Image 1 (cartoon, protein in one colour):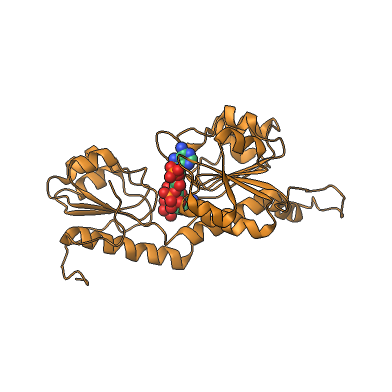
Image 2 (image 1 turned 135 degrees about the vertical axis):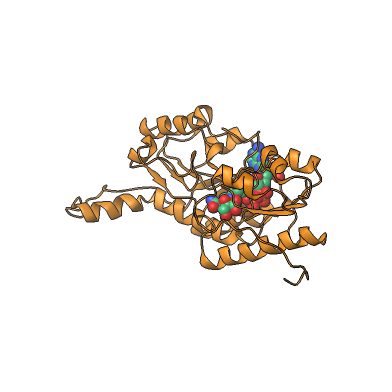
Length: 306
Ligand code: NDP
Ligand code: DGY
């Protein structure tokens, strides 16, 4: 029971590992609500398997590219998600990844351990700094703006952003709306924080990398599929761009023999943008409350407008 005054029968996949598809399809049968993770693809097959009782899908994420939104809308099912509560944690991680990549921190840590640190050398392990730089943010949404706010005090000179529409809130960070072409050709750091949509799928490809500065650092904390990884590998291994930091990849997990993992100028994290204890706790509570509101037909704390 809860503040929504309802008692629910809960069928729980009691493991941190993703539920196998067959268990998911069986487990949702007859359910009124589904609480899912971003690793669960909720498509027509799952919705059919749930059947006509289904009223609400609540995802423990702000990204909803794993949900077949068109299909869900058609059936009158409501969707809950977790915007805002993970914005700060994800923006912090993005800044950490940007600095780690630009200043070659994982490489440096490795050199200390493997004996590569022989003495102080003038150009050894040099990277790129934010002071006086131009930063380009692809997708100045909640997280994009929070990243920009954090980067500005490092002495960033110009902040460009791209998207479908210009954003009045960009004024706070002196953000300049720019075409994607201009953003990538003028930026020292290109940060991707847009949502994954049919339009942004594969957006960061050979054509985009070829317009970037040779000294540019590319960072992606949105979704792996926004990047064409073969093209990124080519850009990094040929020195077309300086370095890349990725918190998201295709697939996830990235196979341990993946070519990107062999590159020193590519820093890859295992999708930990929102991973602070506090944030994950708040996300879980919001996700449960969205589900309960959907079950009782009341206003959800965070409902996705379909
Ligand atoms: P928002 O909806 O606030 O922001 C998404 C932004 O993407 C919008 O500003 C939108 O701009 C922009 N966008 C959409 N299409 C394009 C395009 N074609 N080109 C450029 N920008 C575009 O979402 P959040 O900021 O809360 O989250 C963003 C994404 O970050 C999530 O969808 C998720 O995939 C990812 N994420 C990753 C995490 C991690 O752990 N690494 C943690 C949390 C989120 P416009 O309005 O102009 O279309
Ligand atoms: C999201 O919420 O979309 C992230 O990828 C995980 O927090």
